[in-house]
Image (cartoon, rainbow, N blue to C red; front, side, top):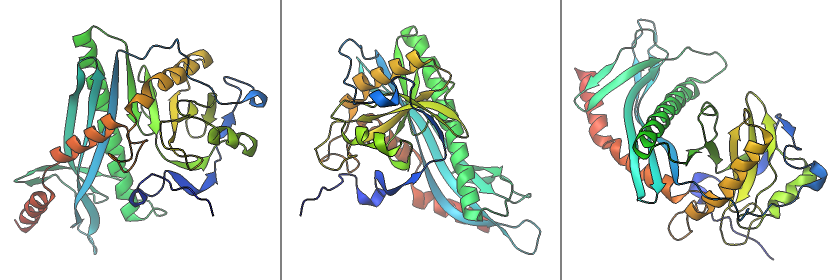
Length: 319
């Protein structure tokens, strides 16, 4: 029996869903090539990597699950969470942190919610409207994710402005860890999607992804759902094995012309593979790029000691 082991750490799920769900997104395949001519595309040797690559990521942690007395018969559920976003720059001077923004929040549906002040920091109250069709825990988690996305956007804008002022607007590429949604207006930005849950390509073209070799990509195509973007698949350096091993999906704004989108795709081929991680150093190799992994570690360190924050919340509740 022959089989292949996915290098992705199973504690994170899988890089490829066991069964890719059929997507309802509208797909335009002929952005770069007609669908009848689809084939793996080699890196363009004439494409020059950017002077600097700015990697954006965020982390979140629930410090405590709490209940807020809203004056009714039952207390409202809430989350006290710490979250942070930052940007690391990789350029000729090496890798260095440009910005890191740490925030704490109380997420609840309670109208009477107020900021929670503790000896370890203040949790700013963020109220979200209840929804009868969404479980409270999921509703609060989504509210936390929205705040984290806003923090990532603010960190990216601040880092890009600071980098341009210091380096005189030097050529750069902004890499968002995750979908580009909500950040597609940022200039020279791409979204970096590590795992796959939906099947966007028709069956006859799915084999093009499996046939990709290291550094190769699919042609650019366009996705339209609740938002639109240009996208393509790219295989990072990895050990041969599973058909989708090392495959990531990269996005750029739908506002770009077809030629500009193809330019972003070619630039991603010249840029992203050199930051790919290796199995013996990272359990999510090669998709968990080294700068992003390092940024995640630094941001988690800045979230603070969870036991200290939990005790501070207990004391604040008792007071």
